[in-house]
Image 1: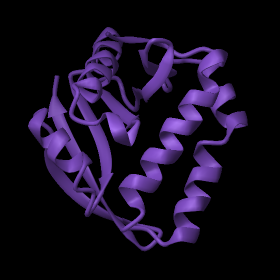
Image 2: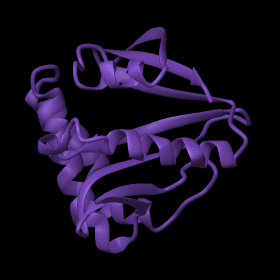
Image 3: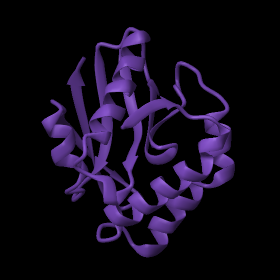
Image 4: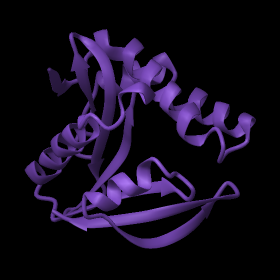
Length: 162
């Protein structure tokens, strides 16, 4: 039975593992190895994750984790970018646990958090070529709004009303 809860310091190692493995699995064919490792080192270091599970605000609602018998199998988080706009900043699963509904559960909790802040729309960015994330988000009602070039890679901006 999967349980979603607000992350705490005991979940840091699991969040780092899930986010690192999911990034390598998802972006290994899209990003250069050096660029991918720089992203992992910047955003998914134990020090940064500890800081991010130890604080939350309207702008960063904190990490949520999907737990299976106390093992982190998914992690996600978001925040508000304007009075009506929520942003999904991160949503990753253990690559071996896809298609079990875990991502749907995490997205639902992030969405509830956004709604508690009175969001009426939800945004996210996904890398062009991410054949794992794009179909998932589109199945949840996100619609492509624009493309942005970031660090030489094309990022797709998606939005849905909530």
